[in-house]
Image 1 (cartoon, rainbow, N blue to C red):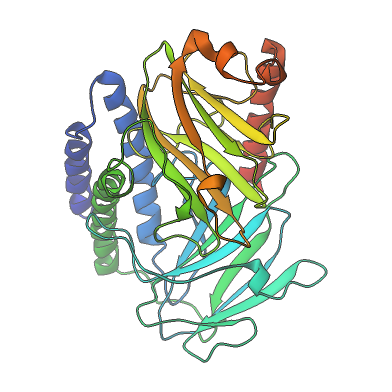
Image 2: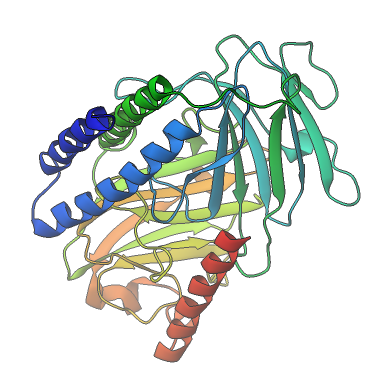
Length: 387
């Protein structure tokens, strides 16, 4: 049967989910099966998008195809490439806070993170007054708007990052291979389809195993309910720093994360589930950018993580998760960050919040104001996904 390799991979993937080490109850398993559904969808798409000679950008992750603690503030796109061919990337710069490019030498695996061979943002390219740009990637020497592909280059990743979900608008981007433009790929064959189903199965299993192992590399090796000082993101962008950690809280506890509002153009805080993906950021406030958050009079942002509603503007909803991941990202930096730029973490009793927050009254919101915040998130994500 043509699809048999993929069918077998799906069955094996279900076992990977079912036996994940972090599962404690049925709700964990339900979330895992939901994660599996998105991973199946993504794996088929990625296998059919493997077109290095006739490339195109696909959305790497989204609300229903999550992976790798996806950033709720970002749109991710990628295209597969060869290191010996020349590619032309054209587009129109939107109004998002950041637009960045990264060349990787492979894909993530359960034992390795791909090397970042090049990483830069749109400050390194020429964008005209109308927002139009053209960038070339190839084996030739570097020059204005030309970036040399190092040996092993296999994937071009593009990120658009929003700080203000309401007002910023995405741009447009496309890719073509210079020497195949205007020609067509050969017709599909049965052998090629068989191979693609096999590849989809391998992508699925690798994707699940990799990102179940990923937190052990970068998160779980530090004490619970702490966050590290800002550091250059491993395998990430040249102009990005991050601070990360993992939490475990009971229903009568709250976590206060205090961080200075940065001079970086983008600063965002998000929560992740034990499956190492973002929690529901459309219908719940599980992430906030510095633009969205309420800054206290002393110039600091105080995020409050708790299951129960504290009536505060910077409440990050745990949505039933007693455990999970924390991450702050700073992007489009023009300087390195130090410990003084990073977060301070404190776990307190839920009832202690009015005493432990120095600007508690300044932070309050009414139930109606909260509902308006959620409605704005829902509308903004819908607008972003549709264009």
